[in-house]
Amino acid sequence: MDFRIVVIGAGVVGLAIAAELSKTFSDIVVLEKNLKFGQETSSRNSEVIHSGIYYPQNSLKAKFCVEGRKLLYDYCIKNEISYKKCGKYVVATNEKENEKLDDILIRAKKNGVENAKRISLDEFKKAEPNVKACGALHFAESGIIDTFALMKSLETHSVNNNVQIVYNSEVVGVKKINNAYQITVKESDSIFNFSTEIVINASGLGAFNVSSMIGLAKPEYELFFWKGEYFSVGNGKNKFVKSLIYPVPNDEISLGIHATIDINGRLKLGPNAILTNAIDYSVDKKNKKDFYESAKRFLPFLEPEDLESDQAGIRPKLTKNRKEFRDFILKNEKDNGFENFINLIGIESPGITASLSIAEYVKNLII
Ligand SMILES: Cc1cc2nc3c(=O)[nH]c(=O)nc-3n(C[C@H](O)[C@H](O)[C@H](O)COP(=O)(O)OP(=O)(O)OC[C@H]3O[C@@H](n4cnc5c(N)ncnc54)[C@H](O)[C@@H]3O)c2cc1C
Image (tube, rainbow, N blue to C red):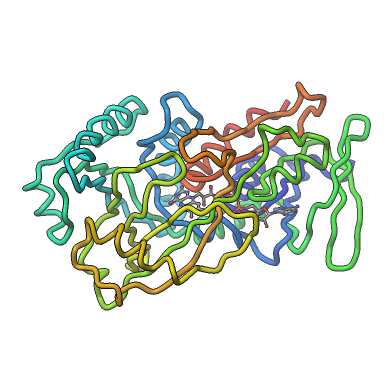
């Protein structure tokens, strides 16, 4: 056997898994098709440490978000990674939304989200004088993180524990051979094979494709790509907001266009949610009007000229229906005849927040 464990994908999840497994196992390799870690979804997102408010009770998303958040804050402190527990407000802009806030709070409490409460409008005005709302919830545990620094640290921990991380190596085939798997890798112009006992498919947008390589192209694993664009807010208006400001969400696909500050103090609006077939990270300038109108409802200080197109990311979602909730798929495919082929499919938000918790769970899936 060439390796004990192959992790496919060096995004935040693959790196968290490699770092966790390296505490117990040896002979681990991470294969990444890009030249560096985190070039895809893990560097194209809101960088928010979520509280775990919206997900159905007992779902993996709820459990990993609440557990993962705590692990992540501890990890940041221990490893000197920049983060800020800046808190988050969900704001209602009309009476109908205001009524929905109560349901959101009940769900958050059921999920074990601490320090969550409805606050009075006086309190809200003191905290965020430039934001307009007729009702607000406060979630003190939400924060922001330097995701690049998190991934760098996970990579360093893995390498220090003898994990090999091989970039520019795309997995193009996975085959079961006796009690092992043969992995076929394309590296520049060459193709080579090696064997491993355990395969962990943490390939994000490529997860359905990799699962299909072994014959697990199940309809319930099919991924739909939902692009999320961002616009940044300039003209010094980043100083008008102190916390994360979210509207009341309308559907299961996205949390609605919200305002986030990153670790460098930049204010961004987004993401929207557009179903797409292509992995294309361009931002359509024509959508500026929608962003402006959505955000102006609660950020009255905005003017159209403050908005500049910024980045885009793509959510690997298990549904194309805006109203349907689908949970993460994290599964040892033993029942399907592939023992120790571990699939991670549909790892969209809150994947960063959940990453360390997902890594612990995956470790326990290994037989
Ligand atoms: C718009 C947007 C906003 C978000 N906001 C937040 C947020 O605020 N907070 C939060 O917690 N989460 C957020 N998320 C979710 C979070 O970003 C993801 O869940 C997380 O980054 C997923 O990490 P990953 O490692 O699974 O995937 P990725 O980062 O996509 O990594 C997968 C890796 O696998 C590699 N790969 C794919 N196929 C192959 C192959 N065949 N061979 C080798 N390598 C391969 C890719 O190159 C990639 O590097 C957001 C996501 C989006 C899109």
